[in-house]
Length: 457
Image 1 (cartoon, one colour):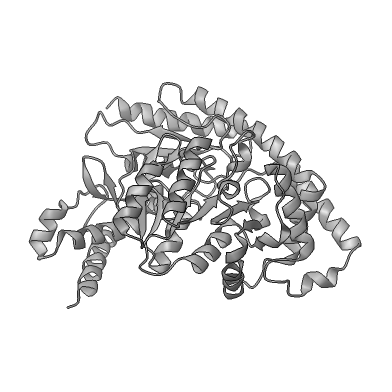
Image 2 (cartoon, rainbow, N blue to C red):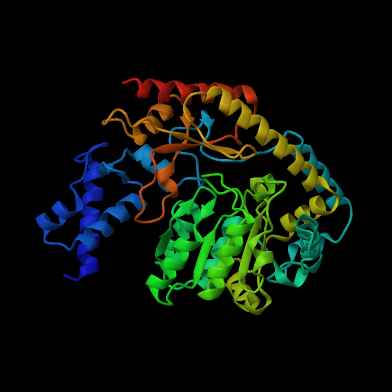
């Protein structure tokens, strides 16, 4: 039997045992060397087996403890973090996803649709758009980004995508090849991980400082891969989930490493709008090799499904080809809605309101989680809560499951761990989705109660 077949045979056998209940939640899998000896496998093959189980949400590795089977509900929360509500949480309080929608946005949508229906060329909304978007939509986005950065952005360098996840999909299609490693932070966006797994693109983890990706570690990784590493994906402005904002000196060092090793940079700015005084984006520091993704899901609304991908001019043909191969072009109706809100100042007003809302909700979280050593950027919509390790039997999954039983959905931080990396024992609390401060406060008090009780065991 070939090595790939043996690897998959073990994965499926363990997956079936977990599904049937033969291996129950919390069961510790054998140490990798013991499993390898028992089944006549290389240790590297067992690492691959356990990594695949973790990717499916069926197991989790914990620092100093080993690899454990996880419950189906908690596994779904980890495997599909930021994709869909965890099973059993409908009607509960969602602290797993950040969908900050303001009350006034519904009426703004109603008014915009009325105005669009009463004037303009509606027939154009029923026709195909150019792959990179209508010129008017690219101009509106370029003007908005130019005001944000204080540096002119050319509409010709910009592509209108069907949301941030689609923009990342386009970039992987354009830049990445199966079997060729891509560098990522040790804790990275689950959506990028999922895309890479579907394309058999291996992710190589780069250790992090408190502020983000460590350029020195990236340099070592590039040397170790000897020219095979061509792309690095990073979230320098308001990292998810850690909340760090990379300072200018660290950004310049990252750019220097990228130029030395001829790396292309994918800069994900999903939460960057919340940082009013952020350092310049990497795209401005290395325009010849940086792709920036600016999604409107968080500053606007998740249902808008529009993002702007700014690319180096020399690499735009590859991006356009990937657009043709994916969705052809973003929906013209949504793109035109976004352009209206960018041009008339509506989006800027929402951003101002959401910055204020994020700061208010951070204050509520700090009050409710007092004494739990939680961490987070003061203006972010997410916060990390460490899980006590004083009780050896207590695991992060136990906390997540206990909260699910009370109708509160949270995300285990290992959902963000790059392959082969063991995440800290912590949960991410998303503050953007609850409809009111009172709902948020009540849910956070449940979190505090569960975690404090667990720490006293």
